[in-house]
Length: 166
Image 1 (cartoon, rainbow, N blue to C red):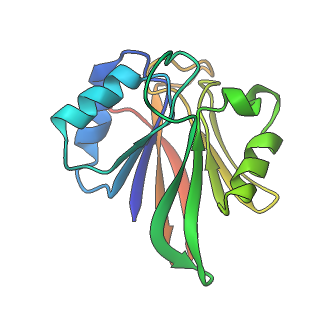
Image 2 (image 1 turned 30 degrees about the horizontal axis):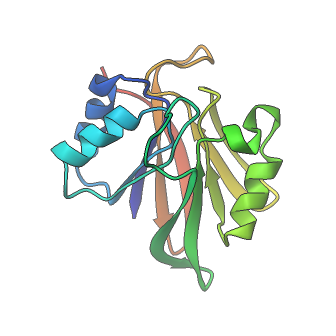
């Protein structure tokens, strides 16, 4: 299963469109917040894709939940692979990922995704795979706009981050 993860688009519909167009065979797309307008556009333009979205700190009054659990339907080591998705501001990710990882564990997840910092991040911490795909619009880490992809297989979860194509 291939999952495409993006975050913090902040009105940049063009880059969101580039990400979707570059990944026509993805099984699922996840938007980690601060892009509710773009999420609404995706739902209209691509009604058949599987899309999970969560609310970011700049998504005031929107309908997306504060967090979501992506159920992948793939089993690794005898357990279903589930991924915890949150923007991160409610989990204090600017101070570390401990609270986020705890929420992932509490929800039976082997991985946790977050945005909010606009900085790329991948690690395995205390048995939880953690990723921030960076911002697909306005990164703060000196890198180009980016997004992530996750391959979920019977052997586990494999994550990577790539630049948005130009």
